Amino acid sequence: MTTTPVRPAGPPAPGVVVPAPAAPVGAPGAPGPSGDGSARVARVARARGALRRTPGRLRLVMALCVLASVVLGALGFQAGAVQSRALDAAAEDAAQLVGVQEVRNALVAADATATGAFLVGGLEPAEQRARYDELVDGAASDLATLSGNNEADAELLGEVAADLTTYTGLVEQARAANRQGFPVGSAYLDQASTILREEMLPTLDEVVLDDADRVAADFSGVRNALWVLAGGLLALAALVLSQVWLARRTHRVLNVGLAAATAVVVVVGVVGTVLLSQASARAHDVRTGSYAATLAASQAYALANDAKSMEAFTLIKRGSGQAYEEEFVAATDDAAQRLDDAAADGVLDGSSAQALDAWVARHAEIRALDDEGDWEGAVALATSIDEGSPNAAFEEFSASARDDIETNAAATRDDLASAGTRSAVAGWLLLAAGAAAALLSWRGVTARLEEYR
Image (cartoon, rainbow, N blue to C red; front, side, top):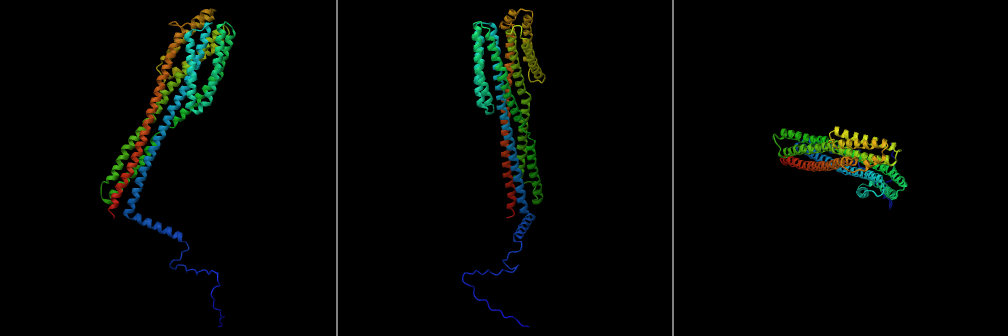
């Protein structure tokens, strides 16, 4: 057989790089076809081997106990913080709502005072003028304060403040004309009342509805503490199972670190969950109790002041005020229904409802005189401030309603603040308990690991 001769290879030309020959597959140092996969397989094998030994299992148990404790602390703190923020927001938004209602009530009461004074003719009584000025000045000051307290309400409240300037200007024109006996005074007063009822009050009602929606959302944000209890049960289960396994493995009944961690989780977890549940229950009680009573009394007071203005306008119109009397009846019926419902629910004692009924009964005497053609007698009775007069009855109702508003608004504020503090304390307690349980678990299992070194 003939072999073809091959010229021996000479040295490579200068500058030419000759690749090194590849090492045979399987040779020492040569990468396998799947080197990364082999490394992963090796690591998994080593991990499995470690878990087959007691020290590896102890490290896994320690990690689970520490993690469960940290989860408990984090969940507990988050629950407490969420509840506390929601309760604080509910208190602030409820105060804002009540404040806006108070502005509305002041404006309606001022209008009722102005229309009542107008009936007297000439120079109105000094005490009624002072009462009107006090109500208007208070409303203007509160509008500025409330606008600064909540940016969401600022624009609408600013519109009301601007309209208030127009309203007071028209009332002053009505007074000036009335002092001189000019009939045009009633037109100015009617125009002022129209601005109040068609522009200012609807805007304030819109703000009240917005605030009420925010309060409802705040109360809904007060979560129940059961999900925190679930986190605590998870941590407790991890600690108890770990102790059972450790007792069987080491033939020791008690691990001091894990036992102390379990005790901390049980005691603080129960206390924290109870505090959060109590805060949630308190928020519910406030929503259906003092907060509901505040709204009922405030709305009834506003409706009654609306009716008081209608009473005066019925007489001012002198024979053509039937529409105003119908509005009076509708407003007082609505106010009475709100107060009766609140009394039936047990959030008001019924004294304001009784005072309202007494005033409405006295109003019927005014209407009887007017309907019989004794307009002067009806005006005299409507403007009288003597004991037993309709105005005296209305003042008794006003005092009772304002007392209900102030008492229940204060209770709402204080109860929500107390519940918010309780939630915050519960959150910090659960966070501290989680951290303490994690540390105790680590120390308890570490003590067993030291025995294997």
